[in-house]
Length: 334
Image (cartoon, rainbow, N blue to C red; front, side, top):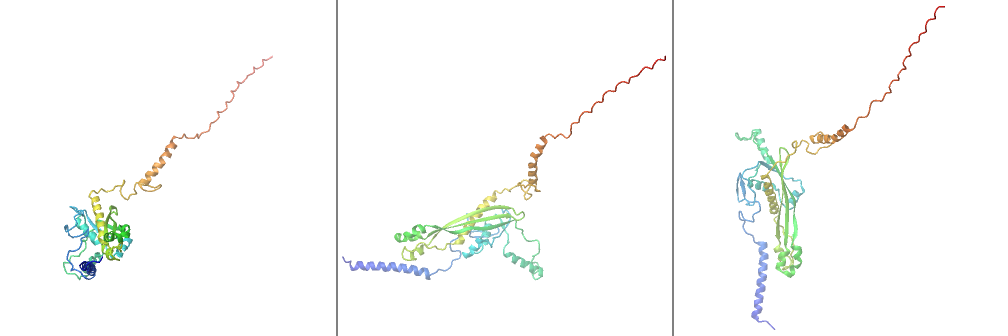
């Protein structure tokens, strides 16, 4: 049965329209851009600003303190493997965003302990050389000490799979829905913050945090190899936002812990030898252990009778009694 000319024309028009929309989408993605907008774009977990104790547009999920607990410097180990991994993702230092997060919380006053210390020393050198203007007031005794140091680290930040492997093979049959499902990936990050006391070196607090998001590779699934055919390709997610969300979680947990802070104590004082002694050691615990070990032996010795040290002596033999002397009567005269 032949279709009518009117029906054939309608089919052609729909086909051309569909192809035109698809071509327009492809062309739009490669050639058209919009003007940048100040403050535009998706906000991350750490956003806004801080000036002194004042903040603006801070994330409401961030913990906040009514009074600061002390001064704090943030130092990251740039020789660690996790820091090199950041470079692979074209991400820089974590310190600037962590410092802003700390200042927004008002829980600590942040002091500079990074590269800007070189600039501070340069200004002091100019003052000492006489090149600085009078009244510059860069004399000694003005640096604020850091009561604490906070060290960030990243345990892992990686793609942990998702629905792509499970549904990617069905994308041809499921069409657009299959392509979308095949491009869904989950990403996770785990971070740690350590805080130490600079005067004693004692670790005061530690907290681990995590974050997770879903990554959607929709366009790649739709146009990667025919409609619904190329799903499953990994689309680069905002790695930095994921890591900062994990650090925000770490920081929130750390603040909740220090709000109820109670110092750890050791009998005899910190750093004086501890409660675990060694035999022959000089610490109080060692001496107490030696005394405790020696006590049973001394007690056993006290209960054992002393061995006889004297030898029995025979009684002296009695001398026979002397016989009385006998006398003879003198002879009578004849």
